[in-house]
Image 1 (tube, rainbow, N blue to C red):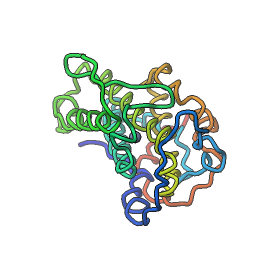
Image 2 (tube, rainbow, N blue to C red):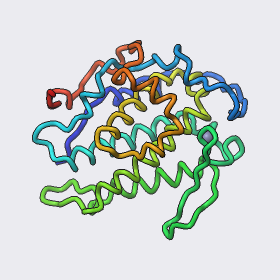
Image 3 (cartoon, rainbow, N blue to C red):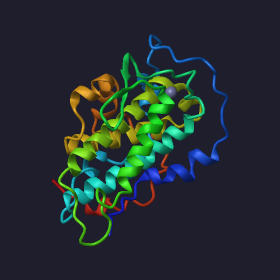
Image 4 (cartoon, rainbow, N blue to C red):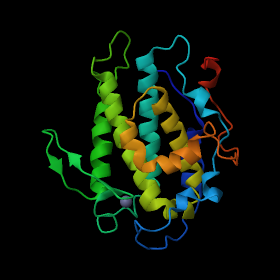
Length: 248
Ligand SMILES: [Zn+2]
């Protein structure tokens, strides 16, 4: 049976995303040279929970490493998808003609490894559908008793993390204003910290890949995932995995 993690993020669907009325987007196109709003202290300190993610990401005793990677990766996929869906109506082919993060541009590579030039929404669509395909493939993410993980499992998890990072980074660099207008920046920060600390714990992301967001990562993750702790308590319920975290 797949190990299930209950995190504060599960509150996402129940709370902010569905309950809040949509603030007006300002309609402006994000400019690369614009000041990075997401680095401003009043926003970086916003969280939905005060959980110590540095401890929560550690492999629990008696849990198989691949099971732990599988359940967390699947959960991150759903949360990133959910977070992106809140701003997807602003991430259009016109507003985001390329998959850009600050001054970095990403290209999708098709199954033959050929570079595909695409808009940001197309790129995200490629990411979400290919990850969805992987996490629901019994040969890659087995859920039935007795089924084994493939030898390529870790490299596939790394690939998924790389793509999820691109999507999160794009939300920060191009859609932070809209995220802010929706009052979902606390959710975004919390998801980012949890994701980065998890990837760091298991070396799932190449530092070269994440360098584009190093300024943000430093601010958000330097204090062990807490940026001043202004959690609104929304995630105070069920942290099922917490009891199993190994104390070190
Ligand atoms: Zn976009």
